[in-house]
Image 1 (cartoon, rainbow, N blue to C red):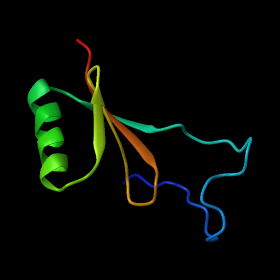
Image 2: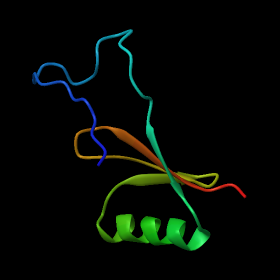
Image 3: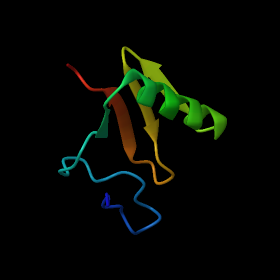
Length: 73
């Protein structure tokens, strides 16, 4: 299970300046077929994402940034 710490109050959309945290969470996909399958399912679900140089960047509904990458040999 993966969990992210989110800010509970409505007025805090981003962590305070200087707060510790992750820039993004990276998921490493083992094959090009897996990568293409994830990209296709995101597109089919109308989830906005940006594909660049072997990475697929997107945000979850809470605004946490995710990056999907292809495993290096």
